[in-house]
Image 1 (cartoon, one colour):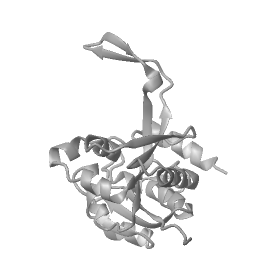
Image 2 (cartoon, one colour):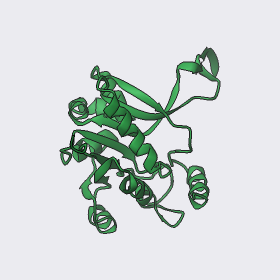
Image 3 (cartoon, one colour):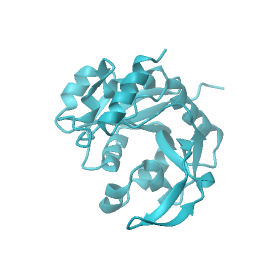
Image 4 (tube, helix red, strand yellow):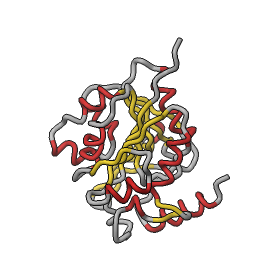
Length: 226
């Protein structure tokens, strides 16, 4: 039996960094000695299940990122995260694709390999997403008044990477622009199209850098990484 074909990684890196107050693209903000984007690319390169990388870059920064990461294909991202992924997918020919946010620099090579392995092992699902159980008590409130306490045993905090069968993701991304603009992750689009998505429990730190406080935490964790 021949070797399994490897997956392609799409890294969504077109975020503006406005909430971070970076004064420029979030993916290029330095953390623990190198740009945020570089941490994700390094993990992808060390993953055994992935051989190609496509980066959806902030418009106007394609050449800069291409020079920084010459081994990757770099395309200009779109107006929304989903639009950026859709653009990058035009350059993906592999059966499986792994989508990851550049704003999650703590994802390890092992996590990338794990979501791909889980997807390969379950032909009945269209996607496998990294996630962790929600530990806090959750309440639904309206105008500051608690309406109900939500059952947390069924709730998961969703992360990236997210692995998909490429045709299923391409089809899901054919949704109308309004739907794409509202989508906060690709798995929700697969779900809306009737696809099956599984969670893969990941309990190691994998925060998304959104604020200055997040950046400080990521800096500390990355500097102490073995």
